[in-house]
Amino acid sequence: MYSSELIKGTLKTIILKLLSDNGKMYGYEITQKVKELTDGKIQLTEGALYPTLHALEADGILTTNAVNVGNRIRKYYTVTKSGKKMASEKVNEFQDFMKTMIFLLDLKLNIG
Figure 1 (cartoon, rainbow, N blue to C red):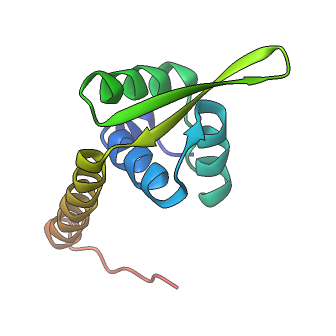
Figure 2: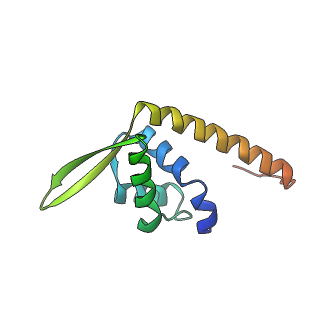
């Protein structure tokens, strides 16, 4: 599992990319998808996820839709048009950051 410091710096990028690729998702679904895609290396906590989701919603980057599921309300998050643009920008920024870090730390990567 990666440190919360590393995850905190990339959380918006992760959320926006997932929602851009998958359409609407609810919070627990996001945590499980991230865990599944990373083989458990990234496990988002509710304490990190929900404040970020709420901040993105307040900024107009995400919209929400409440749906009754059984006797519970499930809140689905969807990326707005400006959110899709931001997702693309954040992914590109992160990609450039990774290239810079690989160079800076003189890393030899064996990705396969």
